Image (cartoon, rainbow, N blue to C red; front, side, top):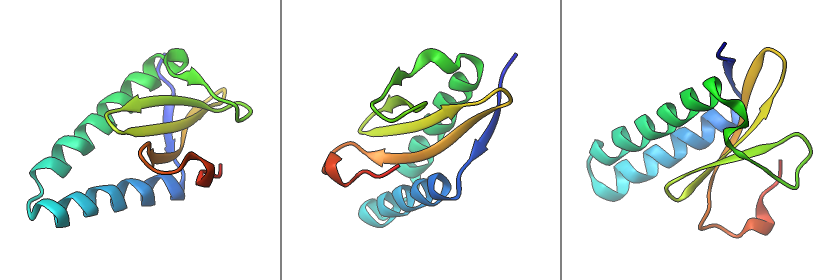
Length: 97
C-alpha cells in the first residue's frame, strides 16, 4: 500500500523557489510545469516503493535524484516525508537537514 505523502514546509518552499527561478530565467512557465510534474511523478513512485531511493549519510534519510535535483525524504510507518529538494549543482557542504 502506498504511503501518504507529507511535504515539509522547507521542501514545499524549495520546490516553489526552484519553479519560480525557471519561470523567471526562461520567461515562460513551460519548463517549470514539466519539472514540477517530474518531481510529483517521482514522489508518487516513492510513495509506492519507498526503498527506491538510496540511503544517505543522514540518519533515516534517503535520496532520489531527479535531473539536477535531489529529493531528500524520510520513511515513517504512515508517511513518506519530503524533507527538501536540493539543487545538486550547489555546494553539498551547505546542505543542512
